[in-house]
Image 1 (cartoon, one colour):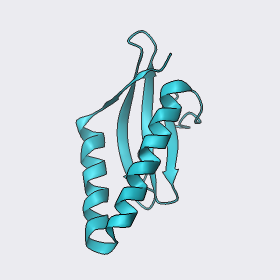
Image 2 (tube, one colour):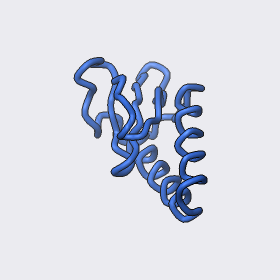
Image 3 (spheres, rainbow, N blue to C red):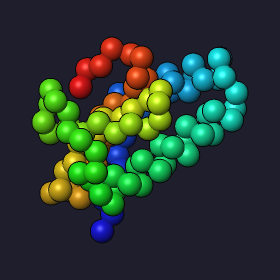
Image 4 (cartoon, one colour):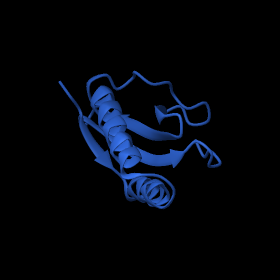
Length: 97
Protein backbone atom coordinates (compact mmCIF):
# COMPACT_ATOMS: atom_id res chain seq x y z
CA UNK A 1 0.00 0.00 0.00
CA UNK A 2 1.33 3.41 -0.98
CA UNK A 3 1.82 5.98 1.76
CA UNK A 4 0.39 9.48 1.40
CA UNK A 5 2.92 12.24 0.64
CA UNK A 6 2.65 15.56 2.53
CA UNK A 7 4.85 18.59 1.91
CA UNK A 8 5.72 20.94 4.78
CA UNK A 9 5.70 24.72 4.22
CA UNK A 10 9.51 24.62 4.52
CA UNK A 11 9.74 22.04 1.72
CA UNK A 12 7.30 24.04 -0.44
CA UNK A 13 9.44 27.14 0.11
CA UNK A 14 12.63 25.28 -0.79
CA UNK A 15 11.06 23.99 -4.00
CA UNK A 16 9.79 27.48 -4.86
CA UNK A 17 13.31 28.86 -4.41
CA UNK A 18 14.78 26.24 -6.74
CA UNK A 19 12.09 26.86 -9.36
CA UNK A 20 12.63 30.61 -9.10
CA UNK A 21 16.34 30.06 -9.75
CA UNK A 22 15.62 27.76 -12.70
CA UNK A 23 13.21 30.30 -14.21
CA UNK A 24 15.91 32.97 -14.06
CA UNK A 25 18.89 30.90 -15.16
CA UNK A 26 17.63 27.95 -17.21
CA UNK A 27 14.80 26.97 -19.54
CA UNK A 28 11.27 25.72 -19.03
CA UNK A 29 12.53 22.28 -20.04
CA UNK A 30 14.69 22.03 -16.90
CA UNK A 31 11.70 22.91 -14.73
CA UNK A 32 9.63 20.17 -16.38
CA UNK A 33 12.49 17.70 -15.91
CA UNK A 34 12.73 18.63 -12.23
CA UNK A 35 8.98 18.10 -11.83
CA UNK A 36 9.25 14.68 -13.48
CA UNK A 37 12.18 13.73 -11.22
CA UNK A 38 10.32 14.85 -8.10
CA UNK A 39 7.25 12.83 -9.09
CA UNK A 40 9.40 9.77 -9.73
CA UNK A 41 11.16 10.04 -6.35
CA UNK A 42 7.97 10.71 -4.39
CA UNK A 43 6.25 7.76 -6.08
CA UNK A 44 9.21 5.54 -5.16
CA UNK A 45 9.26 6.61 -1.51
CA UNK A 46 5.48 6.30 -1.31
CA UNK A 47 5.81 2.61 -2.23
CA UNK A 48 9.21 1.92 -0.64
CA UNK A 49 9.69 4.39 2.25
CA UNK A 50 13.07 3.04 3.34
CA UNK A 51 14.54 3.06 -0.17
CA UNK A 52 16.78 6.06 0.48
CA UNK A 53 19.43 6.21 3.22
CA UNK A 54 18.83 7.78 6.59
CA UNK A 55 20.49 11.03 7.50
CA UNK A 56 23.76 10.70 9.39
CA UNK A 57 22.76 13.56 11.70
CA UNK A 58 19.05 12.81 12.25
CA UNK A 59 18.35 9.07 12.19
CA UNK A 60 14.57 9.49 11.68
CA UNK A 61 15.07 11.42 8.41
CA UNK A 62 15.88 10.10 4.94
CA UNK A 63 17.70 11.96 2.18
CA UNK A 64 16.58 11.28 -1.41
CA UNK A 65 18.60 12.58 -4.35
CA UNK A 66 16.19 14.02 -6.94
CA UNK A 67 18.88 14.88 -9.49
CA UNK A 68 22.50 15.98 -9.45
CA UNK A 69 21.47 19.45 -8.25
CA UNK A 70 18.63 18.79 -5.77
CA UNK A 71 17.54 16.53 -2.94
CA UNK A 72 14.68 16.20 -0.54
CA UNK A 73 14.55 15.20 3.10
CA UNK A 74 11.62 13.18 4.34
CA UNK A 75 10.29 11.41 7.42
CA UNK A 76 8.13 8.28 7.45
CA UNK A 77 5.14 8.06 9.78
CA UNK A 78 3.83 4.49 9.63
CA UNK A 79 1.10 5.17 12.21
CA UNK A 80 -0.46 7.80 9.93
CA UNK A 81 0.47 5.93 6.73
CA UNK A 82 2.21 9.02 5.46
CA UNK A 83 5.51 10.48 4.41
CA UNK A 84 6.31 14.07 5.26
CA UNK A 85 8.66 15.92 2.93
CA UNK A 86 10.59 18.04 5.44
CA UNK A 87 12.77 20.03 3.05
CA UNK A 88 13.76 20.44 -0.58
CA UNK A 89 17.22 21.84 -1.25
CA UNK A 90 19.83 22.39 -3.86
CA UNK A 91 22.96 20.29 -3.46
CA UNK A 92 25.11 23.42 -3.43
CA UNK A 93 23.28 24.83 -0.43
CA UNK A 94 24.76 24.20 3.01
CA UNK A 95 23.18 20.95 4.29
CA UNK A 96 21.08 20.93 7.44
CA UNK A 97 20.33 17.23 7.50
